[in-house]
Image (cartoon, rainbow over all chains, first blue to last red):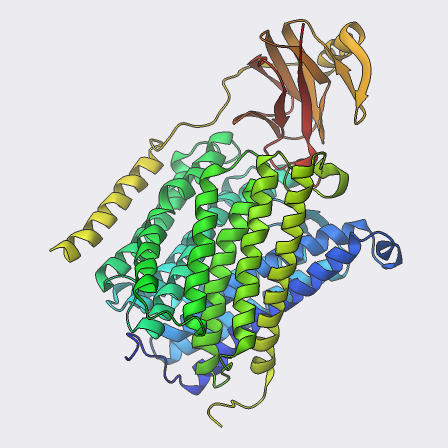
Length: 451
Length: 159
């Protein structure tokens, strides 16, 4: 059956732009993975004595790793999705090309302080930073790049076709997140201490970006379900409603700066925490239920990358979502929740890259054992990882700590953290296979499928 | 008809939830009830030192002195990345923790509620010691690289 939106062909400029965004997204994942390896070595006894960098490198590398794997990967993916549906026209092409150039230049700029050992790292929530002008400029330039690419989607907010409407809603939510960052920046008094400034300037917008990430997953569910089953998880009007509902909350978010009290106060912080409690669960729950029904009714083809991506992303995301209702104050149940939900989004995006984007670029990946292995390793690895964190957090292990600071004084805590390590290993293997498969094909000069 | 009703119902429900969220009617805030007053840091330090001298147990946990105060007012200094002193509280007794941040904005998350601590402003929270175990107190406001390690010690002891 023909997909409900067509991606059979793209004009050459759009194909080139799509390749650029996809390279930026997956290249960022590759650099983030390399930094994760260096982070591991930095914490390995004896090995760390031989490394030429100091202890501050650890935190700078951690910040850069998070920004590349959490912000740039998702936002560059939004850039890639925008290419798929942007209305044809010279202005759209120009906005997209300018966006890609800025998006890439921003990433290069923000990498410089980390690699040159400059600036104070800050592990604030959502968008951790290195306190160096180049890092902030890089973040800003990258954000503007994605904003330009998504600007051309505005006419699609009236589209009756689900995927274009959904991607336009994600773009709208992204603009709302930018508005939150900007308003916070203006409202925070000059001279505010750096840690508090970073935490609060990225707090509201960081929450709205989680709406964007959720929409990216749901876009993947819609597009992959159309590929696999010939129809989306829900009737078209209901699908558009679930995306519209998330867009509605994103649009309301900047208003919270007027109603949610002092931008540096506790109430303001909790208002945005409640945004995710109130605004986030219902739409993915409705669409997830529809998808679960499609998966149960079948046909169930466990060898199909689209089916695997749909099933695993739904399962991992749902487990993470449920964990979100049982969080503590600052223990590892919080990373358990967000690793699982973000793992779900990653699985959906992996499916989009392998099933939709690479074939469109004439660079298909054969649906063989490598693809199956990659999905299973990453999906189950993330699940095991999250389960370990949840058990450890329930026993009182604090988050964002290492070594003695974790206080692993019982067998339960030690076993739980061992489970975390095992899950990490499996997920990293799956991630490496994905990045390798995608990068090798993206870096080829020729388009094999169309050659 | 159901097909047409579901999207409208979803959007309506979201609209009501969004309005409720903006108007602060979607759940209670986890803000710890507290009184506050301005304090001179050196005077507060004096109270803190007096508590250590009068009720110190002589023990130290991670460099923080341990005290077993009498029920009532307990001055507690908060700074990167510690709550001082470490406390041993008597089960069932009521204490008033006077919390003062010395350097930057911190918070005290006690149990599932939290109070923000601005430098120079003392926040007073009432704590009834439970029957046994420990009371978790930690910073919930990002305050620097050591933030997640900023956990105080409150242990419940028998009379």
